[in-house]
Image 1 (spheres, rainbow, N blue to C red):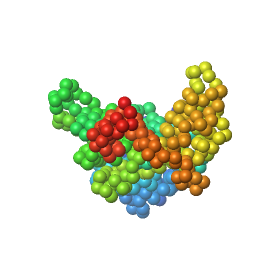
Image 2: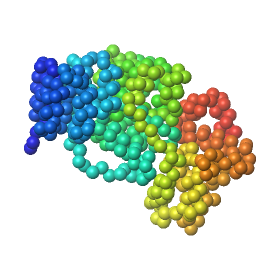
Image 3: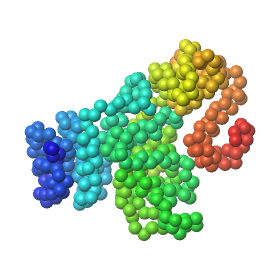
Image 4: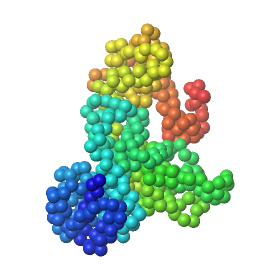
Length: 445
Protein backbone atom coordinates (compact mmCIF):
# COMPACT_ATOMS: atom_id res chain seq x y z
CA UNK A 1 0.00 0.00 0.00
CA UNK A 2 1.38 3.44 -0.97
CA UNK A 3 2.33 5.54 2.04
CA UNK A 4 0.81 8.98 2.33
CA UNK A 5 3.12 11.93 1.78
CA UNK A 6 3.52 15.27 3.55
CA UNK A 7 5.38 18.40 2.49
CA UNK A 8 7.13 20.28 5.32
CA UNK A 9 8.08 23.91 4.66
CA UNK A 10 10.23 25.68 7.26
CA UNK A 11 13.57 27.50 7.19
CA UNK A 12 14.61 26.23 10.65
CA UNK A 13 16.44 22.86 10.42
CA UNK A 14 15.45 21.85 13.98
CA UNK A 15 11.74 22.36 13.24
CA UNK A 16 11.99 20.45 9.97
CA UNK A 17 13.72 17.56 11.70
CA UNK A 18 11.16 17.45 14.52
CA UNK A 19 8.28 17.38 12.03
CA UNK A 20 9.99 14.77 9.84
CA UNK A 21 10.56 12.43 12.80
CA UNK A 22 7.02 12.83 14.15
CA UNK A 23 5.35 12.30 10.79
CA UNK A 24 7.71 9.41 9.99
CA UNK A 25 6.53 7.65 13.16
CA UNK A 26 2.98 8.12 11.85
CA UNK A 27 4.01 6.12 8.75
CA UNK A 28 4.10 9.14 6.43
CA UNK A 29 6.73 9.84 3.81
CA UNK A 30 7.98 13.42 4.02
CA UNK A 31 9.63 15.95 1.74
CA UNK A 32 11.15 19.16 3.11
CA UNK A 33 11.54 22.65 1.70
CA UNK A 34 13.32 25.67 3.15
CA UNK A 35 11.35 28.34 1.31
CA UNK A 36 8.40 29.04 -1.00
CA UNK A 37 10.44 28.37 -4.15
CA UNK A 38 11.50 24.88 -3.05
CA UNK A 39 7.96 24.10 -1.89
CA UNK A 40 6.54 24.99 -5.31
CA UNK A 41 9.14 22.79 -6.97
CA UNK A 42 8.18 19.79 -4.81
CA UNK A 43 4.48 20.39 -5.47
CA UNK A 44 5.11 20.43 -9.21
CA UNK A 45 7.04 17.14 -9.06
CA UNK A 46 5.05 14.95 -6.65
CA UNK A 47 1.50 14.54 -5.27
CA UNK A 48 1.01 15.30 -1.59
CA UNK A 49 -1.66 14.45 0.97
CA UNK A 50 -0.78 17.27 3.38
CA UNK A 51 1.36 20.39 3.68
CA UNK A 52 2.73 21.95 6.89
CA UNK A 53 4.22 25.40 6.37
CA UNK A 54 5.75 28.07 8.56
CA UNK A 55 4.27 31.54 8.29
CA UNK A 56 7.57 33.39 7.85
CA UNK A 57 9.81 32.14 5.07
CA UNK A 58 12.96 33.69 3.55
CA UNK A 59 11.37 34.42 0.16
CA UNK A 60 7.73 34.97 1.09
CA UNK A 61 5.01 33.93 3.50
CA UNK A 62 3.03 30.85 4.27
CA UNK A 63 -0.10 32.71 3.16
CA UNK A 64 1.34 32.95 -0.36
CA UNK A 65 1.91 29.20 -0.31
CA UNK A 66 -1.65 28.57 0.93
CA UNK A 67 -3.03 30.60 -1.97
CA UNK A 68 -0.77 28.81 -4.46
CA UNK A 69 -1.91 25.38 -3.23
CA UNK A 70 -5.58 26.40 -3.27
CA UNK A 71 -5.22 27.45 -6.90
CA UNK A 72 -3.04 24.61 -8.20
CA UNK A 73 -3.65 21.73 -5.73
CA UNK A 74 -7.02 22.42 -4.06
CA UNK A 75 -7.37 18.91 -2.61
CA UNK A 76 -4.23 19.25 -0.44
CA UNK A 77 -4.99 20.42 3.14
CA UNK A 78 -2.52 23.05 4.38
CA UNK A 79 -1.77 23.71 8.05
CA UNK A 80 0.00 26.90 9.11
CA UNK A 81 2.68 27.05 11.82
CA UNK A 82 2.74 30.43 13.58
CA UNK A 83 4.61 32.03 16.46
CA UNK A 84 3.02 31.69 19.89
CA UNK A 85 0.50 34.43 20.54
CA UNK A 86 0.09 35.33 16.85
CA UNK A 87 -3.65 34.78 16.89
CA UNK A 88 -4.30 37.39 14.19
CA UNK A 89 -1.87 35.59 11.88
CA UNK A 90 -3.58 32.26 12.51
CA UNK A 91 -7.00 33.76 11.79
CA UNK A 92 -5.71 35.28 8.55
CA UNK A 93 -4.41 31.85 7.54
CA UNK A 94 -7.82 30.27 8.17
CA UNK A 95 -9.54 33.01 6.18
CA UNK A 96 -7.10 32.42 3.34
CA UNK A 97 -8.12 28.75 3.20
CA UNK A 98 -5.73 26.93 5.55
CA UNK A 99 -7.13 23.74 7.09
CA UNK A 100 -5.87 24.56 10.59
CA UNK A 101 -2.91 26.06 12.43
CA UNK A 102 -0.26 25.18 15.02
CA UNK A 103 1.67 27.50 17.31
CA UNK A 104 5.36 27.30 18.20
CA UNK A 105 6.69 25.58 20.22
CA UNK A 106 4.89 22.76 18.46
CA UNK A 107 2.87 20.50 20.76
CA UNK A 108 3.43 16.99 19.36
CA UNK A 109 0.09 15.67 20.59
CA UNK A 110 -1.73 18.52 18.88
CA UNK A 111 0.39 17.97 15.74
CA UNK A 112 -0.60 14.29 15.56
CA UNK A 113 -4.30 15.17 15.99
CA UNK A 114 -4.10 17.77 13.23
CA UNK A 115 -2.32 15.43 10.81
CA UNK A 116 -4.79 12.61 11.47
CA UNK A 117 -7.74 14.97 10.88
CA UNK A 118 -6.25 16.32 7.65
CA UNK A 119 -5.60 12.81 6.32
CA UNK A 120 -9.17 11.73 7.11
CA UNK A 121 -10.34 14.67 5.04
CA UNK A 122 -7.92 13.82 2.24
CA UNK A 123 -9.02 10.17 2.11
CA UNK A 124 -12.61 11.28 1.45
CA UNK A 125 -11.63 13.28 -1.65
CA UNK A 126 -13.16 12.03 -4.85
CA UNK A 127 -16.22 10.58 -3.13
CA UNK A 128 -19.42 11.81 -4.74
CA UNK A 129 -21.43 13.51 -2.00
CA UNK A 130 -25.18 13.28 -2.62
CA UNK A 131 -27.40 16.31 -2.20
CA UNK A 132 -28.51 16.01 1.40
CA UNK A 133 -32.24 15.37 1.62
CA UNK A 134 -32.41 17.83 4.48
CA UNK A 135 -31.08 20.76 2.44
CA UNK A 136 -33.16 20.93 -0.70
CA UNK A 137 -33.53 23.56 -3.38
CA UNK A 138 -32.23 24.27 -6.86
CA UNK A 139 -32.29 28.05 -6.62
CA UNK A 140 -29.00 29.95 -7.14
CA UNK A 141 -28.73 30.90 -3.41
CA UNK A 142 -29.03 27.24 -2.38
CA UNK A 143 -26.55 25.98 -4.96
CA UNK A 144 -24.07 28.63 -3.79
CA UNK A 145 -24.60 27.71 -0.15
CA UNK A 146 -24.03 23.99 -0.78
CA UNK A 147 -20.70 24.83 -2.39
CA UNK A 148 -19.76 26.97 0.61
CA UNK A 149 -20.68 24.17 3.00
CA UNK A 150 -18.38 21.75 1.16
CA UNK A 151 -15.56 24.28 1.26
CA UNK A 152 -16.04 25.06 4.96
CA UNK A 153 -16.21 21.34 5.79
CA UNK A 154 -12.58 21.10 4.61
CA UNK A 155 -11.45 23.61 7.22
CA UNK A 156 -11.23 23.80 11.01
CA UNK A 157 -11.99 27.53 11.02
CA UNK A 158 -14.74 28.87 13.29
CA UNK A 159 -17.83 29.75 11.25
CA UNK A 160 -20.52 32.30 12.08
CA UNK A 161 -23.81 31.21 10.49
CA UNK A 162 -26.24 34.10 10.20
CA UNK A 163 -29.84 33.99 9.08
CA UNK A 164 -33.41 34.45 10.16
CA UNK A 165 -35.21 32.16 12.60
CA UNK A 166 -36.44 29.01 10.90
CA UNK A 167 -34.07 29.28 7.93
CA UNK A 168 -32.08 26.15 8.84
CA UNK A 169 -28.92 27.41 10.60
CA UNK A 170 -28.52 24.32 12.79
CA UNK A 171 -28.95 22.04 9.77
CA UNK A 172 -26.19 23.95 7.94
CA UNK A 173 -23.93 23.56 10.98
CA UNK A 174 -24.62 19.81 11.08
CA UNK A 175 -23.74 19.44 7.40
CA UNK A 176 -20.46 21.33 7.84
CA UNK A 177 -19.64 18.95 10.69
CA UNK A 178 -20.75 15.74 8.98
CA UNK A 179 -18.90 16.42 5.72
CA UNK A 180 -15.65 17.37 7.45
CA UNK A 181 -12.87 15.46 9.17
CA UNK A 182 -14.78 15.48 12.49
CA UNK A 183 -17.87 13.82 11.01
CA UNK A 184 -17.50 10.65 13.09
CA UNK A 185 -17.08 12.63 16.32
CA UNK A 186 -19.80 14.32 18.46
CA UNK A 187 -21.86 17.25 17.23
CA UNK A 188 -23.14 19.08 20.31
CA UNK A 189 -25.75 21.81 19.74
CA UNK A 190 -26.59 24.24 22.55
CA UNK A 191 -29.18 27.00 22.64
CA UNK A 192 -27.37 29.77 24.52
CA UNK A 193 -30.63 31.59 25.22
CA UNK A 194 -32.20 28.62 27.00
CA UNK A 195 -29.56 28.17 29.74
CA UNK A 196 -30.18 30.05 33.02
CA UNK A 197 -27.38 32.54 33.66
CA UNK A 198 -26.40 31.02 37.01
CA UNK A 199 -25.89 27.59 35.43
CA UNK A 200 -23.98 28.64 32.31
CA UNK A 201 -20.44 28.06 33.52
CA UNK A 202 -21.37 24.61 34.83
CA UNK A 203 -23.17 23.71 31.60
CA UNK A 204 -20.28 24.77 29.37
CA UNK A 205 -17.30 23.60 31.45
CA UNK A 206 -18.74 21.03 33.87
CA UNK A 207 -18.43 20.97 37.66
CA UNK A 208 -16.94 18.92 40.47
CA UNK A 209 -18.96 17.23 43.17
CA UNK A 210 -19.62 19.60 46.07
CA UNK A 211 -18.55 22.74 44.14
CA UNK A 212 -21.94 24.34 44.86
CA UNK A 213 -25.29 23.47 46.42
CA UNK A 214 -26.88 20.72 44.39
CA UNK A 215 -23.63 19.48 42.83
CA UNK A 216 -24.03 15.92 44.10
CA UNK A 217 -21.67 14.40 41.53
CA UNK A 218 -19.10 15.36 38.91
CA UNK A 219 -20.66 16.59 35.69
CA UNK A 220 -19.16 16.80 32.21
CA UNK A 221 -19.58 20.13 30.40
CA UNK A 222 -20.54 20.80 26.79
CA UNK A 223 -16.91 21.44 25.78
CA UNK A 224 -15.83 18.07 27.18
CA UNK A 225 -18.79 16.33 25.51
CA UNK A 226 -17.80 17.84 22.15
CA UNK A 227 -14.10 16.97 22.51
CA UNK A 228 -12.79 15.85 19.11
CA UNK A 229 -15.95 17.09 17.42
CA UNK A 230 -17.98 20.26 16.98
CA UNK A 231 -19.74 22.56 19.44
CA UNK A 232 -22.58 24.52 17.85
CA UNK A 233 -23.52 27.66 19.79
CA UNK A 234 -27.00 28.62 18.64
CA UNK A 235 -28.26 32.12 19.51
CA UNK A 236 -24.77 33.02 20.70
CA UNK A 237 -25.81 36.69 20.96
CA UNK A 238 -27.86 35.76 24.03
CA UNK A 239 -24.76 34.97 26.11
CA UNK A 240 -24.31 37.44 29.00
CA UNK A 241 -21.07 39.45 28.98
CA UNK A 242 -19.40 37.61 31.92
CA UNK A 243 -19.90 34.30 30.12
CA UNK A 244 -18.54 35.78 26.90
CA UNK A 245 -15.23 36.42 28.68
CA UNK A 246 -15.01 32.80 29.86
CA UNK A 247 -15.94 31.48 26.42
CA UNK A 248 -13.27 33.61 24.74
CA UNK A 249 -10.61 32.25 27.06
CA UNK A 250 -11.69 28.65 26.48
CA UNK A 251 -11.50 29.13 22.70
CA UNK A 252 -8.11 30.86 22.80
CA UNK A 253 -6.46 28.45 25.26
CA UNK A 254 -8.19 25.32 23.91
CA UNK A 255 -8.67 24.32 27.53
CA UNK A 256 -11.44 24.47 30.15
CA UNK A 257 -11.60 24.24 33.92
CA UNK A 258 -14.64 22.70 35.59
CA UNK A 259 -16.38 24.70 38.33
CA UNK A 260 -14.66 23.69 41.55
CA UNK A 261 -11.80 22.04 39.66
CA UNK A 262 -8.10 22.77 40.12
CA UNK A 263 -6.69 21.70 36.76
CA UNK A 264 -7.46 22.70 33.20
CA UNK A 265 -8.45 20.07 30.67
CA UNK A 266 -7.25 20.35 27.06
CA UNK A 267 -10.14 20.16 24.58
CA UNK A 268 -10.08 19.87 20.80
CA UNK A 269 -13.33 21.43 19.64
CA UNK A 270 -14.37 23.18 16.45
CA UNK A 271 -16.71 26.09 17.16
CA UNK A 272 -19.66 26.91 14.92
CA UNK A 273 -22.12 29.56 16.04
CA UNK A 274 -25.34 31.18 14.86
CA UNK A 275 -27.86 33.84 15.75
CA UNK A 276 -30.85 35.48 14.11
CA UNK A 277 -29.66 38.83 15.48
CA UNK A 278 -27.23 41.24 13.81
CA UNK A 279 -24.09 40.27 15.72
CA UNK A 280 -22.10 43.26 14.46
CA UNK A 281 -24.93 45.47 15.67
CA UNK A 282 -24.80 43.77 19.07
CA UNK A 283 -21.07 44.58 19.22
CA UNK A 284 -21.75 48.23 18.33
CA UNK A 285 -24.39 48.40 21.07
CA UNK A 286 -21.94 47.04 23.65
CA UNK A 287 -23.90 43.83 24.25
CA UNK A 288 -21.34 41.52 22.63
CA UNK A 289 -17.57 41.58 23.06
CA UNK A 290 -15.67 42.67 19.97
CA UNK A 291 -12.73 40.32 20.64
CA UNK A 292 -15.08 37.34 20.89
CA UNK A 293 -16.90 38.47 17.75
CA UNK A 294 -13.66 38.45 15.73
CA UNK A 295 -12.69 35.07 17.17
CA UNK A 296 -16.03 33.49 16.24
CA UNK A 297 -16.58 35.30 12.94
CA UNK A 298 -13.49 34.03 11.15
CA UNK A 299 -15.69 32.99 8.24
CA UNK A 300 -19.30 34.10 7.81
CA UNK A 301 -21.96 32.00 6.09
CA UNK A 302 -25.37 33.50 5.44
CA UNK A 303 -28.38 31.20 5.15
CA UNK A 304 -30.90 32.70 2.69
CA UNK A 305 -34.45 33.41 3.82
CA UNK A 306 -37.19 31.39 2.12
CA UNK A 307 -38.58 34.51 0.41
CA UNK A 308 -35.17 34.93 -1.28
CA UNK A 309 -35.57 31.55 -2.99
CA UNK A 310 -39.25 31.38 -3.88
CA UNK A 311 -38.53 29.02 -6.78
CA UNK A 312 -37.77 26.31 -4.17
CA UNK A 313 -41.19 26.50 -2.48
CA UNK A 314 -42.93 24.04 -4.83
CA UNK A 315 -40.18 21.42 -4.38
CA UNK A 316 -40.06 21.88 -0.61
CA UNK A 317 -43.83 21.68 -0.30
CA UNK A 318 -44.00 18.51 -2.39
CA UNK A 319 -41.36 16.74 -0.28
CA UNK A 320 -42.87 17.92 3.02
CA UNK A 321 -46.31 16.64 2.01
CA UNK A 322 -44.82 13.25 1.05
CA UNK A 323 -43.16 13.04 4.46
CA UNK A 324 -46.46 13.85 6.17
CA UNK A 325 -48.17 11.01 4.29
CA UNK A 326 -45.41 8.46 5.09
CA UNK A 327 -46.63 5.86 7.54
CA UNK A 328 -50.28 6.91 7.32
CA UNK A 329 -51.21 4.68 4.41
CA UNK A 330 -52.70 7.72 2.69
CA UNK A 331 -51.73 9.35 -0.58
CA UNK A 332 -49.69 12.57 -0.32
CA UNK A 333 -51.80 15.69 -0.64
CA UNK A 334 -51.21 18.04 -3.57
CA UNK A 335 -51.28 21.83 -3.67
CA UNK A 336 -53.67 23.32 -6.18
CA UNK A 337 -52.40 26.19 -8.33
CA UNK A 338 -54.04 28.91 -6.21
CA UNK A 339 -52.52 27.51 -3.02
CA UNK A 340 -49.07 27.37 -4.56
CA UNK A 341 -49.34 30.96 -5.79
CA UNK A 342 -50.47 32.01 -2.32
CA UNK A 343 -47.39 30.40 -0.80
CA UNK A 344 -45.10 32.01 -3.35
CA UNK A 345 -46.48 35.47 -2.58
CA UNK A 346 -46.27 35.03 1.21
CA UNK A 347 -43.39 36.62 3.11
CA UNK A 348 -42.63 33.65 5.43
CA UNK A 349 -41.24 35.41 8.52
CA UNK A 350 -40.74 31.93 10.01
CA UNK A 351 -39.04 30.58 6.87
CA UNK A 352 -38.82 26.82 6.20
CA UNK A 353 -40.02 25.95 9.71
CA UNK A 354 -43.17 28.04 9.16
CA UNK A 355 -43.81 26.41 5.76
CA UNK A 356 -43.59 22.97 7.36
CA UNK A 357 -46.00 23.89 10.17
CA UNK A 358 -48.38 25.52 7.69
CA UNK A 359 -48.49 22.45 5.46
CA UNK A 360 -48.97 20.09 8.40
CA UNK A 361 -52.02 22.10 9.46
CA UNK A 362 -53.37 22.28 5.90
CA UNK A 363 -52.84 18.53 5.43
CA UNK A 364 -55.18 17.78 8.32
CA UNK A 365 -57.83 20.22 7.01
CA UNK A 366 -57.89 19.45 3.31
CA UNK A 367 -60.36 17.18 1.51
CA UNK A 368 -59.78 14.77 -1.38
CA UNK A 369 -56.00 15.11 -0.97
CA UNK A 370 -56.12 18.62 -2.43
CA UNK A 371 -54.85 21.61 -0.47
CA UNK A 372 -56.62 24.79 -1.48
CA UNK A 373 -55.70 28.39 -0.72
CA UNK A 374 -58.31 28.47 2.05
CA UNK A 375 -56.73 25.41 3.73
CA UNK A 376 -53.52 27.39 4.21
CA UNK A 377 -55.31 29.84 6.52
CA UNK A 378 -53.28 32.79 5.29
CA UNK A 379 -56.16 35.27 5.44
CA UNK A 380 -54.83 36.79 8.66
CA UNK A 381 -51.27 37.03 7.38
CA UNK A 382 -49.89 40.03 5.59
CA UNK A 383 -49.47 39.22 1.87
CA UNK A 384 -46.89 40.76 -0.40
CA UNK A 385 -47.58 42.96 -3.35
CA UNK A 386 -45.71 42.46 -6.63
CA UNK A 387 -42.79 44.61 -5.46
CA UNK A 388 -42.42 42.51 -2.29
CA UNK A 389 -43.96 45.08 0.09
CA UNK A 390 -46.81 44.43 2.52
CA UNK A 391 -50.26 44.99 1.00
CA UNK A 392 -52.11 47.03 3.66
CA UNK A 393 -55.34 47.06 1.67
CA UNK A 394 -55.88 43.40 2.50
CA UNK A 395 -55.79 43.84 6.30
CA UNK A 396 -59.39 43.84 7.58
CA UNK A 397 -58.75 44.45 11.28
CA UNK A 398 -55.52 45.92 12.64
CA UNK A 399 -56.04 44.61 16.19
CA UNK A 400 -56.66 41.06 14.97
CA UNK A 401 -53.66 41.27 12.68
CA UNK A 402 -51.34 42.49 15.46
CA UNK A 403 -52.61 39.78 17.80
CA UNK A 404 -51.86 37.17 15.12
CA UNK A 405 -48.28 38.43 14.75
CA UNK A 406 -47.83 38.59 18.55
CA UNK A 407 -49.05 35.02 18.95
CA UNK A 408 -46.77 33.80 16.17
CA UNK A 409 -43.66 35.44 17.66
CA UNK A 410 -44.39 34.18 21.17
CA UNK A 411 -45.02 30.64 19.95
CA UNK A 412 -41.79 30.74 17.95
CA UNK A 413 -39.79 31.93 20.97
CA UNK A 414 -41.35 29.22 23.17
CA UNK A 415 -40.60 26.48 20.63
CA UNK A 416 -36.98 27.64 20.19
CA UNK A 417 -36.42 27.64 23.97
CA UNK A 418 -38.24 24.32 24.48
CA UNK A 419 -41.04 26.12 26.32
CA UNK A 420 -38.73 27.74 28.85
CA UNK A 421 -40.89 30.82 29.53
CA UNK A 422 -38.11 32.79 31.22
CA UNK A 423 -35.73 32.24 28.27
CA UNK A 424 -38.52 33.01 25.78
CA UNK A 425 -39.30 36.28 27.58
CA UNK A 426 -35.61 37.26 27.47
CA UNK A 427 -35.45 36.50 23.75
CA UNK A 428 -38.46 38.76 23.11
CA UNK A 429 -37.13 41.55 25.36
CA UNK A 430 -40.03 41.13 27.82
CA UNK A 431 -40.15 40.90 31.60
CA UNK A 432 -41.44 37.61 32.95
CA UNK A 433 -44.51 39.41 34.32
CA UNK A 434 -45.27 40.87 30.88
CA UNK A 435 -44.74 37.45 29.27
CA UNK A 436 -47.14 35.81 31.72
CA UNK A 437 -49.78 38.46 31.01
CA UNK A 438 -49.51 37.98 27.24
CA UNK A 439 -49.72 34.19 27.51
CA UNK A 440 -52.90 34.54 29.54
CA UNK A 441 -54.38 37.13 27.14
CA UNK A 442 -53.69 34.95 24.10
CA UNK A 443 -54.83 31.73 25.79
CA UNK A 444 -51.47 29.98 25.38
CA UNK A 445 -50.93 27.23 27.96
